[in-house]
Image 1: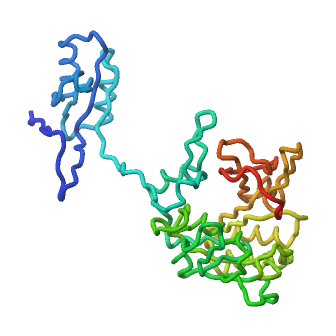
Image 2: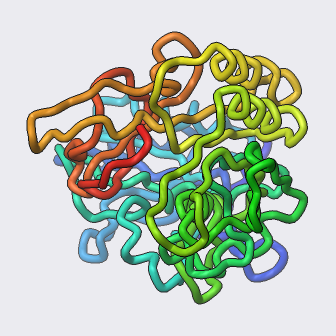
Image 3: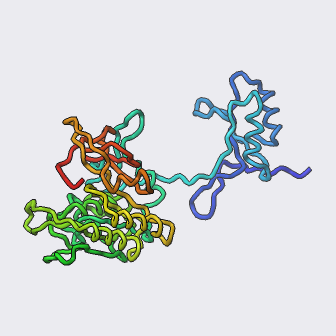
Length: 364
């Protein structure tokens, strides 16, 4: 009979200084009161041997076994688990665990939508982004379109704390101004200082990490495509009326996002007004033809039509309302405690994330 091969140490060292777990070890815990004879019989039944006995004073209550290299780990564990004397058996496994990633940006601790100790019904009220960051910070091959009032690539103080946070996110990206005919010294990449919404959205998406300024974006490695459909009338910082692109111009922006700009994700933090065939058709084209025919991911804000504190609750606004009939993703807001925000609508809402509890009047 061939000699069974076992590993005689707890860890096998690979090249370099990184230990890896062997694949032919197993932990097994026997039930209380099981005799030493039954323990020995169970271990022999799977052709294994003990490499560490239980040491309750050190916190080890299970036997560590080594079994033949040619044995199937699951079969060994199942065979042991099927014995009445065994409480559980679990093969040792090589893992891809890594230290949890947390950015060092100065405002990160205040970004409760990313990391929040509050819970509701035992569920943490945040987007659990640190678990995603352990896997990826986004890819430079992924393009995210921000259709809004423009994004300040000069990184001035517009954008509510994201100053300097978008460096590099426009490399290979594109810009499109649906209202270029109205330009008076500003454009999609260089909006007036009171056009701050798009810069804030871009910072939430792709604010850089560990650069000593601002907060942390969800996916700092992605490329941003910038499209402008809103504009303030004057560059003087006053709350002047907002100019809004026509439905045809907005449709043009959506079509530019998925076709010329090849955006994988098209973010629209706006909505409201009557449905428009041109906009609906452009969204449909993005959903069917974007990403080389796989379809772009199209996200719309569900809107801010409510004043729940006054007993007024509105419905999800257009175009987010298309999520009930198309593959549009509608997003809404909850408070940092998990409750609906004052302005959150009722209707088909696909995803929610923590945001401010109250907001001033805005589009949608």
